[in-house]
Structure formats: C-alpha cells, structure tokens
Image (cartoon, rainbow, N blue to C red; front, side, top):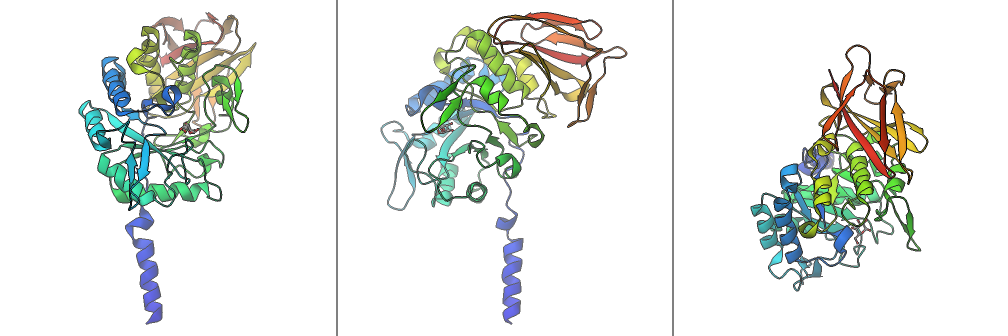
Amino acid sequence: MHSMKVFLFVAMTVLSPMAFAQKFEGLAKTPQMGWNSWNKFGCDVSEQLIRETADAMVASGMKDAGYRYINIDDCWHGERDATGFIQPNKEHFPSGMKALADYVHSKGLKLGIYSDAGWKTCGGKPGSRGYEYQDALTYAEWGVDYLKYDWCNTDGLKAEGAYLTMREALRKAGRPVLFSICEWGDNQPWDWAKNVGHSWRTTGDIYNCFDCVYDHGTWKSWGVLQILDKQEGLREHAGPDHWNDMDMLEVGNGMSINQDRAHFSIWAMLASPLIAGNDLPTMSKETTAILTNRLVISVNQDRLGIQAFRHSTRDGVEYWFKPLEDGAWAFMALNRNKEARKIAFNWKTEKISDELSKQTLSSHGPGYALRDLWRDRSAGTTRQLFVADVPGHDVLLLKLTPR
Ligand code: GLA
C-alpha cells in the first residue's frame, strides 16, 4: 500500500503539467524588437512617458519597421499590499497598469515590465523573491506581454533555479510572456537558459559610448566595442527563440551618427534583440532613419537566426559575415579606428566558410550581387575586387545575394 502511494506521488509529480512546463515557445522566433525606458530615463518612469512613447513608436514608423514591445524598466513599483500583491507607484502610474496595458494594446503594441529575482531590484524596489507566483499572476491580470528579470540582491540564490521558478510562475499564470533574462552573463546563462527564457544578457550594462569602459567603483559598464568583444565564443548558443542579448540600444542618446550606425549594425549582425533606449517623441530624423532602416533590420530578423562571425581583422578593420536565408550573406566591415580607412576585399581569394552553420560563400561561377544596405544601392558583384572608404567608428554593410 505504501509503495503504491509513493508510486502515485512520483507519477503525479513526473506527469503533472508543472513538471513538463516549458517557456512560452515561439514568442521570439526572430530577435525581439521594442523600446525600454532605462538607458534614457532611468528611474524617471511614468504612465505619461509610456503613453507618449507608444504614440511615437507608431508615428515615427518604428512600429511599421517591426518594433512591438514598450518596456517599463526599474522603478515603476509602489509597495506590496497587505496580502503581498505588488502595486505600481500611484503618483507616477495613477491610472494603474491595466489601463496602461490597454492603451499600449490599442496601438497594436505590447507592454513589458521589469522585476528582479532577488529581494530588491537594482533600484531598491521590491524584488520578486518569494513572490514569484503572485507577481506573475499580477502581470497576467494587468495584460503584460514581456518580463525583463534582473539579478540584483540575489546573494545565496542559484541563477538557473531562480529563473526557472519565474518561468514556472509565468507559465502557471497562463498569459504568454516573453521572458528576458538579465543576469549579465555571470553564471553562463547560454549553457542553461535556452529553455528557460527567450534571451539572456551576455554582459554587464551598456554605456553610452563607442569605445570606453565606465568604472562605477564596484561595477563597470561597457561601450559598444567592449560589448562586442565580450561576445567571443557565444554564437553557437543563440538561435530562434533563444538569443544572446547584447543589452539595449544607445542609438540617439548622444554618440555620433557614424557610431550609432555602427552600433546598430553590430547588433543586427549578431542577432541581438533590438530594444531602443532613446527618447522616441523627440528623436532626430537621423536617429529615426537608423532605427527604422528596413534593410539592416532584415539582417537582424533573418529567419535562420545565425549570428555573424568575425572572419578577419586588418589595420583595425574587422570583417564579419552572417549567413542568411536562401544562400545569401550579410557582410560588415567595422572600422574600429577613429580615422577613416580604405578597405579592399577580394571575394575570390578569401576563404569564407562557417563551421557552425556549414555554409560556404563560393565566389566561383556567377557569384553574388552586392547591395550597400545603408545607402540602399548596388555595390557591384563578387567578381570584382571590393574597395571602399569606411569613416572612423563606422561600418560598411552589404548584402550578398546569389546571382
Ligand atoms: C541593471 C540592469 C539594467 C537596468 C537596471 C535597473 O543594471 O542590467 O539593464 O535594468 O538594472 O536598475
């Protein structure tokens, strides 16, 4: 009799839906695109900001270009109520989160929110530790579509377990939520997070500079090139529905246009989520043009979901290749120097082959037609030697299409 009970218990545990619960599959078949409040606004978030941003995402053409998520980062929180349910800050979100989600949804967009696996968020607000199921339920009731889940104040917690708990809680709450893991790469999420979330941060925070490290004392944040260099060895872990997240964009936050263009191109080539981090209602024409460049976005959103690899480096210029659908390729020449460089690339003599995806670029026979994606014009074919001038801290981005 006893063994029968044990058997039933084990069978129920193993066969219960909980034991089989998965992340909500298919929400990020291509890298997610959206906006997040943190890089520009920090803790200064309000329902007015979110509404205006949603309006601007539509008016600027970003929605048409593929952006969907409007994500509120840290500091939206008020206190927990007497039974432990989290409330938004009443002063900054007087209409409540449900009304805000309804507004964002009415624009054909989706709403994202932020929490933390620890006792407090990085900004010192209530974290989800011990309240995971209540919080997931609350987000589902509000109509939230995306959760960025941070890793501050988690002493003694195991990362995989902490993120699994929230995955289970979201699943149980029942509303499909894109789960964005923000653990900064400290516990190698690329090794365990593929079935836990839809993306995981690979590094600490981005800093709004192209080539610098900002030392905060106890932690550092990283410029665009520094984040790029930290992606070494990670490309094999990413793919449809599970992406290496290089952090939110700083496009439009003060770098030069050349640097912003290079930054956006790098994120596109490495198939990182494209989450804008600037002030959408007031952004310049140049910033809008970068964020909405459909040809560049299509490199990021290519359905194969294969990250670019660095082929070679010469004179401070890096040559990157990304295999695309239908035998096409994207090519990026990234000039890390402050000064312009003349580049020459010989498609016929360079060996261009990707061990990971087993794709080889063969310039024998008809070869490929070249299109300059930022200028949207033809750039010859792979039968000719390719020569170009690349300004300092800028890129040349081509699509190679089989002829
Ligand atoms: C961490 C995250 C950032 C941001 C802040 C908010 O630093 O990595 O992206 O969410 O917390 O406090």
